[in-house]
Amino acid sequence: MAGFETKLMLTLSLLLLIGVCTGSFYDNFDITWGDGRANIFESGQLLTCTLDKISGSGFQSKKEYLFGKIDMKMKLVAGNSAGTVTAYYLSSKGETWDEIDFEFLGNVTGQPYVLHTNVFTGGKGNREMQFYLWFDPTADFHTYTVLWNPLNIIFLVDGIPIRVFKNNEAHGVAYPKSQPMKIYSSLWEADDWATQGGRVKTDWSNAPFSAYYRSFSDVDCCSRTSIWNWVTCNANSNSWMWTTLNSNQMGQMKWVQDEYLIYNYCTDYKRFPLGLPTECNLA
Image (cartoon, rainbow, N blue to C red; front, side, top):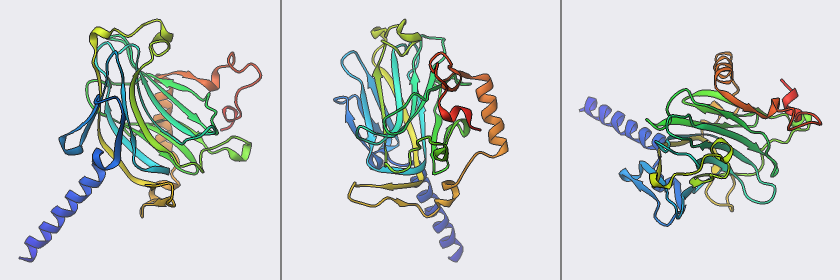
């Protein structure tokens, strides 16, 4: 009997762990726009956003976060996705907002998506880095992660770091550390700029377009459910709160940036004729 009880407790613990790690979209998010074009399926484990000629759609988190490791599995619009943007980002509110961006810019069939990343502090962005991906993001789900702590913001794809924005406040560079942010995601049309600088427009004969989301996780985070509450951290916060890249991860990031980086604001001298932003000259 004792053996049975032990197995039962282990099973329940495993189910609880799975429930925490995958996260129900019903529990964690509100669909905020799209007039029925965003929907939740599979008992809260799958969310879809769709776009047609009338409207796109989107959702936002119930919680606000002040630091965290946030994971989301996504499968992007397949086929001719030119002119579409699937945005997945954290953002605060107000005129001096902070923001951490993943944006996926669609393309014509057979041409790669562009992954656009950016960091805003105090309402100022202009820190774009863009990448191709080393896989087809429309064929299956892949994990996109923001690890945001007091030391750095790390962008990861399937656990591989692609970009780091460090806290360089000591050198006069603003860093997001005081404004809680919600998670937002949306599928929308931006064919005036999204694909090849706006030269390729959306082919509405392919609509509706759909993006898919699974396996949301915010197990490692500091969050609150209301502006009237203090931000509180999960008990295991020390495992990520002071994380920086190790030497192996630095090697992975170098590989990505050597092979797949297609735009880096820190090398765009024409855009910044008076000098590159301060962080570009820091190690």
